[in-house]
Length: 302
Ligand code: SIN
Figure 1: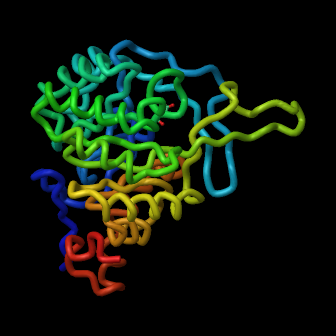
Figure 2: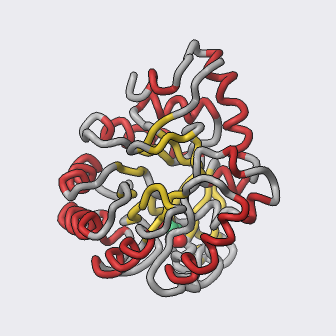
């Protein structure tokens, strides 16, 4: 019998496997495939103050071992999430959820986080300063340590729940950005969001994606994500949720050895809707194979 339970800021999860924001919507689509209560939890779609239709299509390009998306934060807006999505989710999910909040200004992050903080279904607020697909918001915040500090501090001033800041890998020094979030009062760090990438269609001679560029994710980015999780986990004194190309129980264990307390699974859900279920079911076997009795024993062991 192995122990898969992990704790994030005092919140005990049955296992460390968490579908990543933007790959699980608000849960109900996946509940048609399996009982999503088996998940550690999940992070819901990045939510902004106003509803957003998102970017023009095509928004997706395939790559070897991955994909590029330029969804553009399509979401129903914070008020619809609170009034409709969370009550719907309550019918099918009996755990708390991670609320992923995106924005275009410090005021917008503050507005949304203050509202979502009041929702008892929310366990952690994940402040997304790393979306590469919008202009003037998202990643524009996450690539400047001063902005990261300012957003984190402002959100912390109006919230009571743990605040995790989701970082962009599209920076020179990820440690500097993570430290800025920690200095601003972050309770944890989520990383990495997608890498900025592009594809060109040889027939049309134009970018595949209407917005030209987008966020590259999938197994190809796993070593980059692992490296950044390792660097950040060794530099800060707050928990790290690792993500980026995770698609197997072995990847989850590797991320935890790099320093992650929990692990998000993103693009894999889009390839196989059962990905998280299969990873959770396989975790005890892989733990036994490598002589791991308790996942907590391997966090940062590398
Ligand atoms: C998107 O909606 O464009 C993706 C969200 C993100 O990368 O944070």
